Image (tube, rainbow, N blue to C red; front, side, top):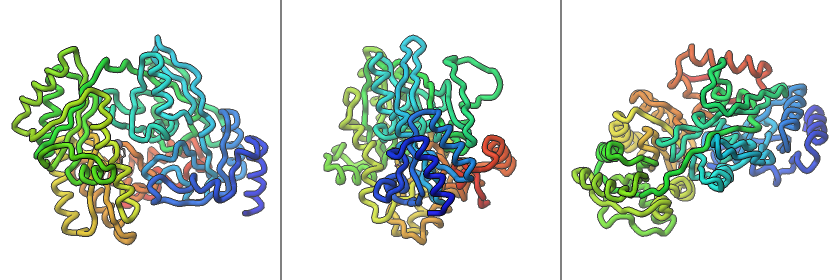
Length: 461
Ligand code: 2HG
Ligand code: ZN
């Protein structure tokens, strides 16, 4: 440890207390490795401030010392955006875990950045409402984390992304200045949308400490159908049929036979269908009292593309389990940390993208297994590549992301850029766009101490 680091650690200890500056290896190991175990960094200290004032003092101290800082929520990110790869101080939001208020009239929730998505959901449900974002990592993912990555999740098709839920934000700039825009207005056009700018900034512009988010009225009842289809085109056709049927589409998720097989074995589940189909679509719908009938009508109308279907009343955990266990099963089964490429394409391109991907993978990387699944209604596919040798990671990522770009897609749909995609950011944004991002960044953090290794650093064309 250097002399400067030691004195910074002392200063941080004065601010948050000795119990909340972690320096010992066994205490910090969970903060320096990401969920996928692909990214492991190192740090002199993990700091856990209890409130905004402490976050401000911590950042001011780091700023004075010229020490870089990586903010971290539940550490469930999948692009290595919240691990200290270059020895940055880790600022954990775990203690910013208070829900200050749920307003059932204005339908808003005020929550600390470290409140988990599941806690926000529970608080909202207590008032007959719900939080509009849901994702498999709900028990660990935090409000600050989902805002910072602008997470999408399984309800995005109904409620929009995290940015769309965000009304107000309290955040601390790199030098310790506290920025607050704390309105509960859905219409408020006074100048730039700064909360919206912080959403998706991946902790590079400020550390979010509190958020005011919209809540939604939940559907009174839902039906879930797991539908076996022959093709991606068939799945999209059925989604379209549902959207035109008078039902409200709550979720639309695509899986492949190989993904379902993997989950089935990993979780010891029964096969969902009597007959094997190359793709499965999980849909959740809500509607009036006749939702069951409308769903059956839609399934009948979709007969030409549907091979088999199972229907259950929501929440239908049994059916959702096939979809929600994909990440865990992939992580457990792959012999190497999976290469996780969260991408999106226009709906018209999904089928050709996946077909081309299959052929290219087979030809160029025969030992690599590709498991693709995701939020098909949003054009968002999670390309998970298993058993990728270390010396193949870059080449396979490059191949997939270039293919995405050729299909008019985005190299990051909902997980962020992080470290995993940083070298390819030029595939998604023009040089002028990147320059504007850099200007914004240096306006807010001229010394470049907030998560300096990401967004937008050194793109390769
Ligand atoms: C999901 O949709 C998450 O389940 C994780 O975004 C996706 O593991 C993944 O690639
Ligand atoms: Zn997802």
